Image (cartoon, rainbow, N blue to C red):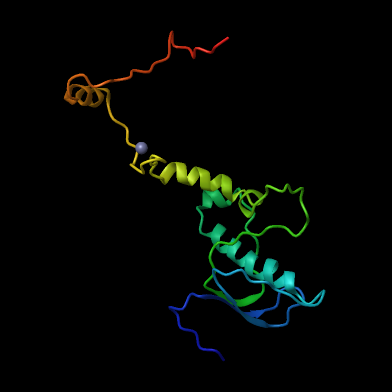
Length: 170
Ligand SMILES: [Zn+2]
């Protein structure tokens, strides 16, 4: 029997997996690494990856949501595994080939990229791409104070829409 250090979260520990044709499989998968599962056809690669590890990570994640949210979600049954440790929410990309373009990435195929855009828009702090200064909103009177504090003969550009409409060149 392997002893596990409870603080060691460097690997996903699967004990007694009996999903589909798996016969009490014990395995440790390094975390935060690209891991490839290989083997003969029918040896249970997909059962281990999709039906045990992915299914359990997905189930735990969905179970943690509010009961209001879970009524709209299909929370799957617990897979037949004694225990899986150090699991975080999981994402699975289907084996079936989907229409892919040369510009597809893991981010776009999984739609993670769309969620990340929303996340960064909400919690991110925008910075000027040139001088890296954080951008912040200032009030009209702060703009005016800045202008009045400027030395004499400072050039100031005032940009505005005309007539409330964009003036497009014809
Ligand atoms: Zn700047």
